[in-house]
Amino acid sequence: MIETTFVNAVDAPSLALLVPVVQRGLKHRSTDLKKKAATIVGNMCNLVAESKDVSPYLNDLVPILKSTILDPSPEVRSQASQALGSLVKSMDEAQYEELERYLLFTMKSDSSMVERQGAAQGMGEMLGASPVTRFEAVLDELMLQCGSRLPHIREGYIACMACLPVSMGDALEPFIPKILPTILSGLSDEMEAVREVCSLARHPLNGGIVPLTLRIR
Image (cartoon, rainbow, N blue to C red; front, side, top):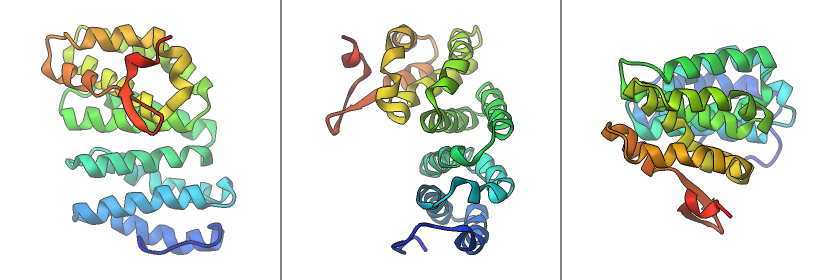
């Protein structure tokens, strides 16, 4: 399936065939198969003719992807996060808000850095695929938790902020003056993990990658 070239839009009957296959792939032990299955979900949603056609399958796909974004493999987490973002356009507000609450909560997890960073990637991809009003609604919460006294919470939330330049692209530009001080402050954080995620905050420009600071005018 990963090697298939789709020449037509994916419709409801096609999804009925595809979804059970990718579900099985996402549950597989193989890291490579999970990564490929997550890639297929993202591509499948981008090719679907009507976003409402995906809605009946959200209850099957979202719980698996919530688990897959916490996978030990960074590549699996990345692909699963992108797949989760691709499902956003098929969600109603209640479904989106439930997933948002889950990710914001998991970004505070004190049990595993992998869980925090997986949730941060998922949140970043969701915000990148959503109307900017959704980012505006959650920005104050992100900023507040980036300044938490608990280092693992700072790390989880700043990891999300570091994902936004790539996932949101130019839509983030009006907010850079507000979030840049948080990123710069994190570069001198006492926690090494916080410093590392801050150093990853980059912004795509002219086909390349340049530091986020260069977007300030």
